[in-house]
Image (cartoon, rainbow, N blue to C red; front, side, top):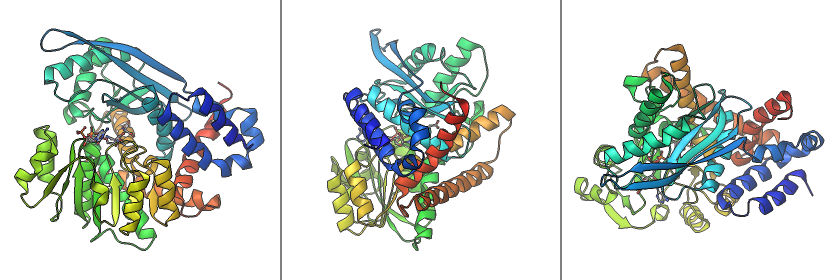
Length: 444
Ligand code: NDP
Ligand code: 2IT
């Protein structure tokens, strides 16, 4: 049995209760086979794969907070510090009722390779809580964030581990977390990214994941003989990543037909109105059913459905496993050219394979959505220098990072005999630097 298969089999036993984590391990390790085969003895002797799938540490803690009625509520907090071979731990905090150890571990594991792909010195981590921000007052959010940080602050600082946003964690939550960190530690340092502009945030961080997704997708289309201009695009989600993906796609001349949230989805034949979307989601914090009030020509449907709309480019930007084999079949039947993952692991493994086998250009999340964390690393640089760059400076760095990521994953795929397979390319290109550092740093 190959080394990768052996480690996958062991993981299957050991992590049977962690389906999302196992899914990510299988996707990554099986696509690394070509590079593992070439270095099998060395990697085996140093147990590289076993060490790679076992986090440096996983921290779990109680988060007690008081709701507006005076009742004490309890949630579970997580921070999984996965691998710091190439830099301090870096990765977002997810606040969603579905959060559990499996989900945080899959996200932290993916983050190792994503962060490496950016070319910047950041290791992989993820955290969060099963806290549900929906329906909570601003004060409840604040008290939750303060309690969460009271414990998390023991394990992080600007050179050790730098958390950021993810599902349910945006500028408001980062502000409360930062305030509490500062109060507890008495330190004004860049310990979180995605901060507000008045207290050390970077211009373009809000837009970075969505914009970066479009920069990479445009380059992928261009290098395969297509132009983003005039393309019909379907987007899922309507949060941070989706909103700025829609905005950039439209700036580049594409027409975005759909967005969604966890209750329903919108089809707008005239192209999604970003201003309306921002008003509903960023200001009113409302549901997408409100969209029809702004655009009477649009349709609102309950449930899932964005992938049933005919499009050239599909951008899943909501959550994991939201694009299934059935959806992939529909997209292929409708002539989709490209699928780029704005979310983390939104496409199931069988759907990914189906898309690739059917000639669809497929950009995996760890490459396509790396613009967010890359810009977080740029925020860290600005904080260290105690300076701030213009929007144009950050945006231009982001664009060139995304273009580099595309070319690195393309060339790694070709070097290892899988031209055009960007899943293989992204995993190998991300892994190469991490494994090199792990070998150089010795067994730990
Ligand atoms: P937001 O919280 O801003 O938005 C999430 C969106 O996805 C919302 O529209 C939400 O709908 C929808 N959604 C979330 N969970 C589910 C679910 N279980 N079923 C259906 N819809 C769901 O998060 P982001 O935009 O920041 O994150 C979206 C994805 O992008 C995630 O996979 C995240 O890990 C990834 N990502 C984020 C980065 C960032 O910089 N923010 C960077 C790289 C990747 P509703 O509001 O109804 O819950
Ligand atoms: O999944 C991700 O890359 C993020 N949520 C962003 C992490 C970060 O540190 O900016």
